[in-house]
Length: 65
Image (cartoon, one colour):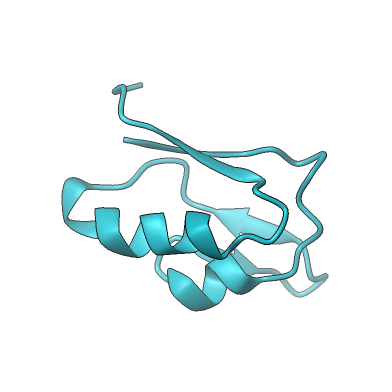
């Protein structure tokens, strides 16, 4: 399963990193870094991160890459 972040929308608020710290983080410069894929077991945490984004910059794809 894939995480898709629209970098043109993302303003690095970091709420996703609070919701799903195993998949999202802000680097030393304050820029978002994220895992591009996740396992089914993490779905709830990752979906919480998607819901927490104030700019709706995060999307999910259930298709395998």
